[in-house]
Image (cartoon, rainbow, N blue to C red; front, side, top):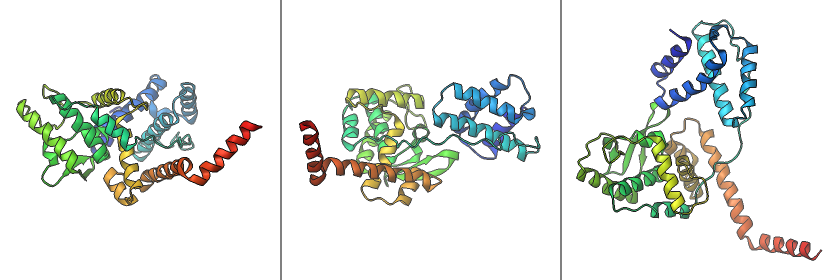
Length: 302
């Protein structure tokens, strides 16, 4: 079997990675395979790897994209080494580019309310879209988790849903009364339309909606609400985590709700809340404002 196909099979069967994760690996390794131009991946040298990196660097990719592509190639060769297909790993001395330390952008509660209020609830589409946005924010779901939800995963009585995160790991997430009310309206509308799909969020024809569709509807309502930020589904997840921490939730609980394996992934939101606290302080504290005002007046008089 082709070494690449062997690797993808390993990810699917042994690692039990999700389809989206495997698809990401395939996309990353496709560019590496194209670079090899027919050369046997088992015969690749360190020089080949460095030349591949040089080619990637010329494409001016984002640091996160570059890290992911290099990481995929490293994982591929770590697998080949473990399987005994190669004696030396050509990626062993390759270091990953530094992570982009920019903090994730979030929406304020007011901005989220504006987006929700921009969605009309007088049709099947409106009720569905409202439920989608409500769940993204109320539960901090990833897009893949949302589109993978089935009707049976929703416990309306107790206010919980079951979703499957990275690596198909199951987790239970609570949702509040408002989300419950919105979901109830949508499910009733589904029933009226005679939709019987096992998937929760579907088109009017009963077809499961895709992640690209979620991006499109969120963009549409953000523009309608006149939100200037470039809104995407993951921004609602960022907002969910940040707002919880701002209101006193402990880090471990937020980690569980988000489905993060490593708490260090969740910790970025604590830095975000500190930055927001600093912004509030600088814009609101009377002494700082007075001092800053004096500095401005001095500079204008000089």
